[in-house]
Length: 185
Image (cartoon, rainbow, N blue to C red; front, side):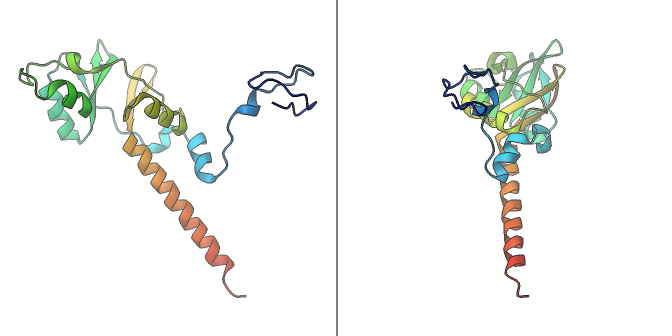
């Protein structure tokens, strides 16, 4: 990594130049190259207008959770224990852990089939970071907490909708710009 101050060739990942001690930390931080990249890197999760987090106590039954998910048209329920987020119960948890069980859904508690200790973010985190967490973790929902209290939830669908909107906006702007430049004088 070349130091911008003295042009010394430093080892990749160095925090400071070996020769002049100039800071190098920001040099290997990715910089956006287009409007969409910039939006993803700079916009916070709050621009996705996160849905309200629907929750149930850990002792609730899977049947209650499924009914509540259907009622609110959501793909997951936050599972609470002693006022704190204990886990998340999603459609995938239902299919892989509860459906087809020998027990009735009314008999299975959420605490038995939930995904414990889910990854959480705050509404101030970037959309890029949320996408990274979803991709690495292999999940589609992220609870949003503020001061350890659930304030919402985002889904992969929210991010995809945001991306589609941004792409349409960019295409519309490009089309309008092309039309403006092609008008005869």
